[in-house]
Image 1 (cartoon, helix red, strand yellow):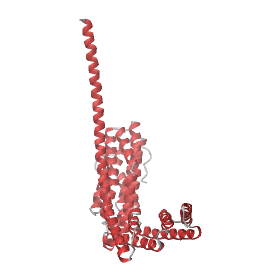
Image 2 (cartoon, rainbow, N blue to C red):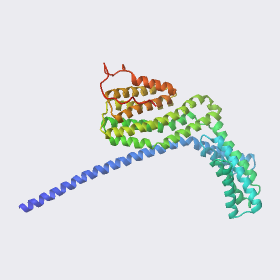
Image 3 (tube, rainbow, N blue to C red):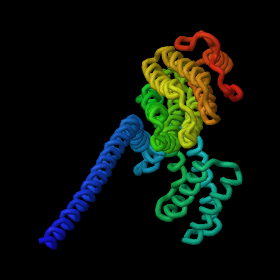
Image 4 (tube, rainbow, N blue to C red):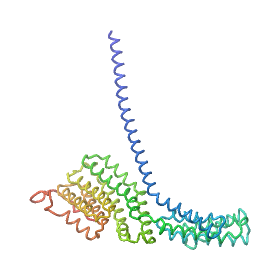
Length: 420
């Protein structure tokens, strides 16, 4: 009986251990599946956002391709107007924000390719080694003349066409020139007159991912500071560092919107608003970088077990709210007064945290709150000098709401952090 009881006890313990491992494995699998589900939703959302951003460009490219074919075939009598639609689509799709320059580069590249191709064919004839020599010569000549990548590509491609098609197609050079001019001109016509995009709408859509990214990671960092959760702050830092796509999209949209406002008479009245948006791009980029420094130092703060005064997470959260408000007021075409107020409130809370006593990393976090707030104020349309003055005043006020009465606490304080 004792042996049987011992065997039953070992079996129950083994089953209990198996059940415990099963519970742990189930929780781990459930967490992994939830993470994959979240990533899948985020990826789908990102893809749909990219599709919405490209719809206008796709419509412009389709219209330009069709019109350029009609112009080259019906009006100019080209029986096979292949290069005109290609030139139109290349002008629109390759260099967003530089389409006029792209058209000039297209024509110059075609000219170099035709010149080199005809010259070498005249002396050397056609064949595989002649083709290689023509392409090499066209590229070397273009690079030596200081041509851009677009001109180099067009010169090489045209040289290939001249060498390979000249034996079977007569008088290819002039139609190729004409097609390049027609395609580029039709692309500019579509962009400026027939189907000009709303530049502010394009900018708002392009700016949203960058500003959302900044606001979300500042919010996560604020939560991590409140909870002293090092991993949460580190996650925010890792995501914020991966901001290249968002900033590139924003910068390209600004260039495209400025070009639309320059070329399209229907969009000339938007120039002042676009100028304001364009001027905001650099300070938003600086706010991204300074927020990265802030969050990185917050990780060290938690790792070193430094004090986290209650106003410090509030200051970071106010920065996030300022970014949200800036995005909203930009989209509505309003003066970003609320965004400015939130930025200055962040500085005020940082001042309170500094007065409560912080360590070395805490003082850097406070300094970066000030610097990031200054960047956001400049992005809202305030000059750098005025932004610095407002930041200093908000940080240094002793009678701000919530400040303790009487003299400041006797704490060991490092040198006051700089604004910029």
